[in-house]
Structure formats: structure tokens, C-alpha cells
Amino acid sequence: MSRWGMIKMAHGKQRREDSLSRERIVEAAIALLDSSGESALTFKALSDRLETGAGAIYWHIDNKNDLLIAACDAVVARVLGALPENRIPQEAIRALALDMFDAIDAHPWVGATLARSAGQLPTVRILERIGQQVRALGVPDDAQWAAVSALLSYILGVSGQNAANAQLARARNLDRSDFLGEMSSVWSKLDPAEYPFTNSIAAQLPAHDDRADFLAGIDLILSGISRR
Image (cartoon, rainbow, N blue to C red):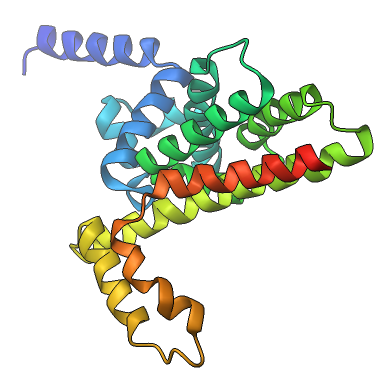
């Protein structure tokens, strides 16, 4: 390579590193996580995607855990930022819950990251938004924490489990109907004397709607909060 070619290459690399930002790194990490999962997120893979050196990334992000939380926070902030304002509290909580359910379904790694990052910014964002709506419902001060905790635990727990089930089905090369059909078959063969409820609902599994069931649970919690 000529001296001029080497200079152009060096300048090109310098421009890429100069334009590198935390936001650009986080967006690249989200794309990598969505396409290949958490195990594929390495600083080398990220460096290759961004066409830069690992040192340039470490300038903005300390380690993989910080990167995961930053990526998770970006997704959560996007979901909360897209929610319409001026809704009554019950509608606002239902919209938040369903949008988080859909976001975790689309980005399964978000559920796992939220489960490991209790007390950190992504979870605090959701906690704060739910807390504001619970206050708007007129829940007494001494009952607000229990109400918010119940909603937060349900939203993150059920959404995370739904995403985990979808990943398990994909890992076994099954679509949703096949996965639920297989589970239904197993449940239907359980001893009805020992598992009367599970056996009785086995036939409902293949046709049930995950999002509708999820919202039904939210409504049950909201109903309990209102009665209290």
C-alpha cells in the first residue's frame, strides 16, 4: 500500500472513532442483542460492527454489564417516551404494562436484564411511572408501595416469562402453536385426581391469547387497588 493510501486509511479510522458516541454504541449493542442474543454481545463483536477498536468503546462503556443496562435503559426510555399523556390512571397503567410486555417480547434480553438490575435506572424509570399513576388513583401513602410493587412485579415477571417461553420454543424449532400444543398434550395426560385444575384447562392452552391474559391480570390488580 502506498504512503497516501495508509494516510487515507488512518484518517478514515480516526473519523470513525471521532464520531463514536455512547448513543451509537448502545444502538449497535441493541441490534446485536436482538439479532444474536446476550451471549453474542462481546466488545470484539461490537468493535467489528462499529468498525473501531475496543479501546474506543471502553472510553464510553466500562464493561458488558454496564452496556447491557444502558441498552435496556434505551429500550425502556423509548417505550415510556412513546406513551400518550393525559390518560386516566387506570388506562395509563394498562398502556404502560402492555407496551412493556410487547417490548420485552420483541427484545427478550430486556426482561433478563431488568431482572438483574433491580434498583438501577431502567427499573426505576418504570417504577416511577407506575408510582405516579398509583398516586393519581388516590391510593393512600401507606399503601402506595405495596400497590406499585405488585404492578411492577407482575409486569416484569409475566413479560419476562412470556419472552423466555418464546425463546425456548425457538430453541426447539417450534412455533407458538406447536409449543403450546405439546404442553397441552402433556397436561391432558396428568392424573385428574391429583391435578384436577391443570388437567381441566389443558385443552384451552393452544388457543389462549397471551396479551389478553396479561391484561386480565393487570385489571385484577387494579380492581384490588380500587377496592382497597
